[in-house]
Image (cartoon, rainbow, N blue to C red; front, side):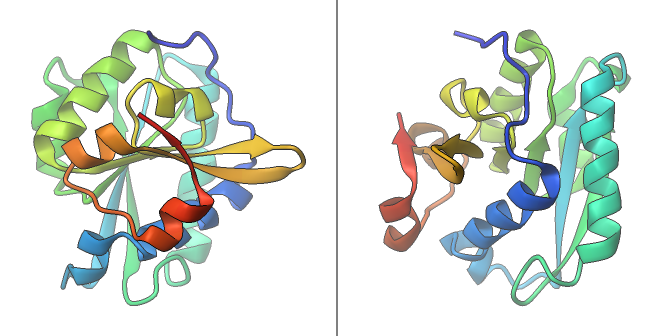
Length: 174
């Protein structure tokens, strides 16, 4: 059931550090011996809000790439889903560990969640509804505070395992 809403509810400079705090506690990520975590920002060049979010993340990444993860630097790579018919092959080529899903169309979202599961790439987003639709990790709002949302089914399909510490504070969807 793809959502029509495509809105980030917590600003990038607030929700990205939250997502990376969770990534620091994801068991596979902490065991990984690579010095750099590559994050593919999946966006749509035909969508103004998608481009705006991608640009914000790239700018944020340039400023904060050394501060986001405990023992790795982070490199962001922008991936326009309109560049290819085969999003899985394109994502494979990026060698990304993590996908960040910017605001995109429902059809594109389904393609991306399928590809992230096949490629075993953890998917994350600032659009809370996308977690209901198959993205593994997101940030929404509960009251006046940011809320971590985890889709357990999707995260398992992507090969991710979150610590009990994270699961204890997150809203879990199946």
